[in-house]
Amino acid sequence: MKSLPHKTYKWYNNITIHLSVISIIIVLLSLTLEGGIYGTNYKIRRTYSFFKKRKKFKPGTTRRIIRHTYKSHRGY
Image 1 (cartoon, rainbow, N blue to C red):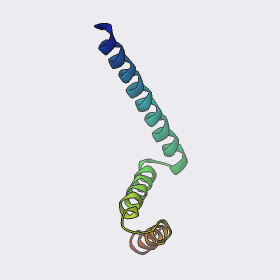
Image 2 (image 1 turned 30 degrees about the vertical axis):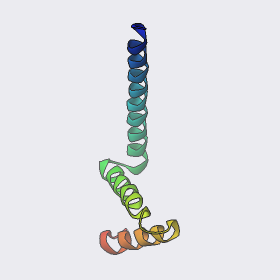
Image 3 (image 1 turned 90 degrees about the vertical axis):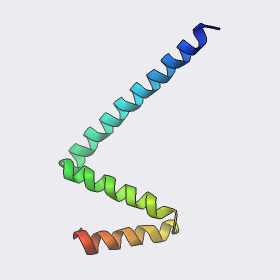
Image 4 (image 1 turned 135 degrees about the vertical axis):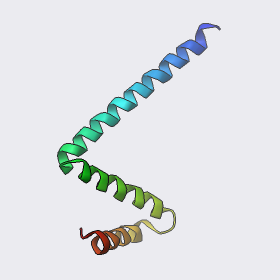
């Protein structure tokens, strides 16, 4: 029974390492696709706002709201 917690900890550590690697790869891909840090920042902000507004409105209306706000305020 003594070896069990150690094993579980190792397994958990493995998962965290995998997640970090995946996140790094995603960041690199987004950097190359969007062209620079600003592009990724904009994308992250957009997705974050989408998830924030998703709770209040229906999914159809959120898209319209986000598109409208980003066009009107940030000139996209």
